[in-house]
Image 1: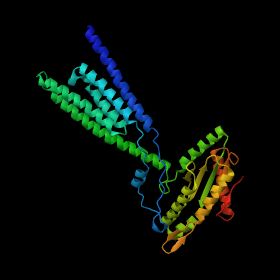
Image 2 (image 1 turned 30 degrees about the vertical axis):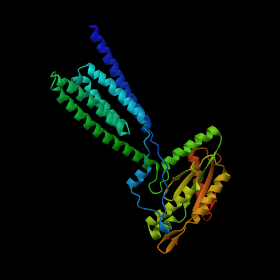
Image 3 (image 1 turned 180 degrees about the vertical axis):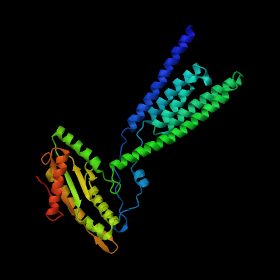
Image 4 (image 1 turned 90 degrees about the horizontal axis):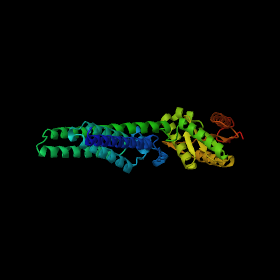
Length: 348
């Protein structure tokens, strides 16, 4: 084999490897940025005139209000796409130009860039840069009369690259939004915008692990809205939902940013108070109980008042595991119910 052909073969192999490495790096970068999207804290409900809360929060409004901001590193993605295009362009130039069998790698770059990136810039770069090169190469070839048909090949490839970029960008964006919406529904309760029971479990497990490392305990509060069934039977479930939302707003205003509140059941809430002693947790519970008792939900000319029965437990004194803590706090809350409601009970 002549030395020129050997050098050409080695150069083509090196450029192909560089292009594949750049593509792999782009996919890894996008995967790190989207494997666990950041879920921002839900915004509080807005009280309307007369103490009412906005009930017209459809699924679209909920998702749009909670969607996380893009976390992709735009500069790194553009750099990786540019490196991949440069490597493949040199490879195409060395192996026949417009008619090179490696033109197909451009389509792979477009697909990866569009599906992996949350930003449209890498997708545009991956489609426009190869198209510009192919059209320029075809114009040069057609200009000197050596290959008039090359322009037809280049135009077809450029059109196909643009179409692929558009289709994969739209498809990738829809897939990401669907995934983010599913994560939101799994983590946040649609009515209250508090965390769900499933997410609560993982949060408590994390606090147990942190407590084991640091030696500092934490507390749990369980709140049950008193006589909500009576409200539902008398005024209907929409009014009962308004009461739950009003209680939710009190919970938001009475807890710290480091605390975690979740809707545990229909009318039950659990609040995790990290690195908080029994006295501090009792102070929080007392404020919650008093503020909820002061609520007034107006329905026409009538006013609905409510209260909560609260259970308070501390880790590890009242339970070392998730199951033990939930059993203890549930028993403490029901003890408050039996003692007359609108009170706080702790087994400690």
